[in-house]
Amino acid sequence: MSSDDIALEDPQSYDWPKLVDDLNGLLRLKTTPIGMKMFATVEEMAAVPRLRRPKDIHTTDQIVAQAARLGWTVGITATDLVGAQCSTVIGLSPRDDRWLSGKNMAGVWFETIEDSAQHQAAMDTVPFGKYQAMAVSPLTSGRLNPPDICLIYATPGQMIILINGLQWSGYKKFDWSVVGESSCADSWGRALATGEPSLSIPCFAERRYGGVLDDELLMAIPPKYLPRAIAGMARLAANGLRYPIPQYGIQSDARAGLAVSYGG
Image (cartoon, rainbow, N blue to C red):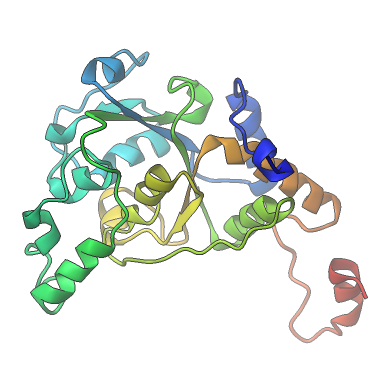
């Protein structure tokens, strides 16, 4: 087992208030970091403390937003969601022929039914049959104990510092993709399916229904990566590489600044 593998073993427990405090101190986040957890049964989901259940039909974007924007703990099943496009991403509905056809998106988001079907096939989704429910909650609540993934909304400037922190030790090139509309497949769909940090550009639906701001990107990340990212960002900050990134000046002589940040 490599030192990198050891560093990424799941901790016995997480100090969520401290982790979130560290994240906010390093990145000055505007949106509440939250967790998402899948449940094999509805009963397990219903046992989460202070859980809210929707009274109306929503998109998954709205459920996520109720945790990130309002601080609620919310649990859902497939019947709480507006359709299979949402529930299939989190494994609560199957990737059946109707879903894979992309019929509902043809002529709206994509020119042809073939384009639409290719989009559906490209989406990362949680395998169907393992879970019956999902819940989201602010990380500081500790109610998901632990979540399967954490969702962090951040500006591009904040996000690159977070990524740099992940790459400080045990460097890895991250390869992410963009499906376009339904980009929740790029974030929570991919992270839940692969167990890897997954970055997305939130799509039209996430912004229209989930309240995602114009300047926000979304990182979906398994919790075991957070201590490593925070430790990396702290080391970078000690080297003067921190958020907010100060402007040096587009007409200044760059040599003095480069000598500090890049050596040489």
